[in-house]
Amino acid sequence: MQTYPTGYAQSHRMAEKIFREILLRHGMAVREEQIALCHEILDTLYNKEISLCEAGVGIGKTLAYLVACVLWQTNRPDRLKLPVVISTSSVVLQDAIINDYLPNLSAILLEEGIIQAPLTAVIRKGKERFVCDARLAERASLVHPKRTREKGSLRIAENILDMDHIPELSRYDRCRICVPQSCPRDCFLREDCRYQQYLRDSMKPDIQICNHNYLLADASHRQEDRPLLLRSYQALVVDEAHKLPDAARQMYTETLSPHNMDELCLLLQQAHYKDFARQLRTAILTLSFSCTQGLPKLRGKASEPFVLTPFSRAALIDCIALLQNAGGLPDVPRYLLNRLGEAESLLRLFFWRCRRASYTSTTMPMVSPHSAQPAAAYRSCSAVRCGTHANPRF
Image 1 (cartoon, rainbow, N blue to C red):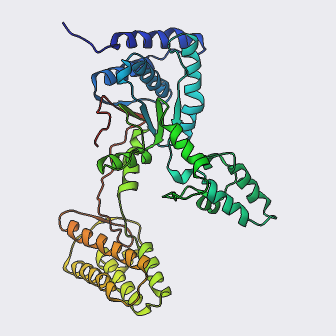
Image 2: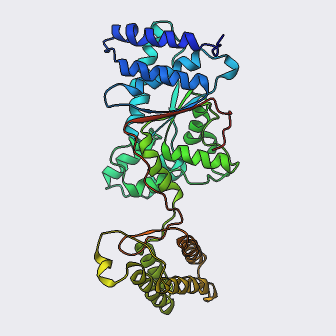
Image 3: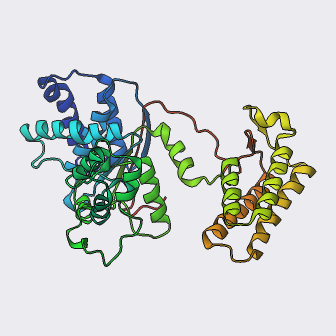
């Protein structure tokens, strides 16, 4: 006789009632695809599996996985309840979930007696999206009184923590008032800091919403045994999952482009290392020429496979040796040494990897230690991961 997890049958019965009766009474249409998706996600959650679900536009996938997650949490034993994480790629969808979907769903389920307390949720973002009160006070004191628009935006920031919701805030001011990477322990506003209070409050809600980059950053922290960005969870919904590979490439791929090298040569020039900057620029141009197999192709936009020829091999070795010798220059600033060291490490890795794999060269060569291939696109795809350990390893 087959046995099912606690609450399994009850959750499926309630899903049918919610979509076919309750939501219908509140003016929503019955969509068979939406109901089927909700049952699929419930099966995934209870069976501790992974599902890749391709959902067409307009079937109501967001409401389908929200109902499934709420029923799963509601019908589980208290000792097993942990938050659900929902990862999206767009701020628009995050705002829709937190401001529209969840409040409406919470009100309906409370009215019907399906849940006993309102649903709680929070949007988790990187600290660069939030206002630092100490830096805000410093920046506001420096703005000229006649700059009324800038003054107005900074006054709004005194009451709104999330900078995404502050109108007409310039990119310059965002950089000047955002929370720094490491908060000083002796900050005079630490006790009353709105960001620290947000961090404390964000650990409580049962639904944690973030973007793909934040999710991947949390995964890196878990791998490296660093402090968690997200509260420990046992269910993960990846909405807009077809954009997850792009987020991963953006976070984990390091590149060395023509623009990077021009900037490095300019910094060397400004630091009065003109001869070395000229040598490095010549070496990079030689490497570019060897990679593109001729000067006419430097202006083209077409891509071609990279081939390690004797010419390009020698050019790579010359660039690496030149960057390595930069350590012998007298009185080089530390920031410049770090930039030169990073460029050398990337070229070394590229040289090691390009003997084993094909790379693509566009215009001047783009040096990347990760040759990520385009992933198969899942249109409007939701990936659900559930039943993992409370502190999963990725």
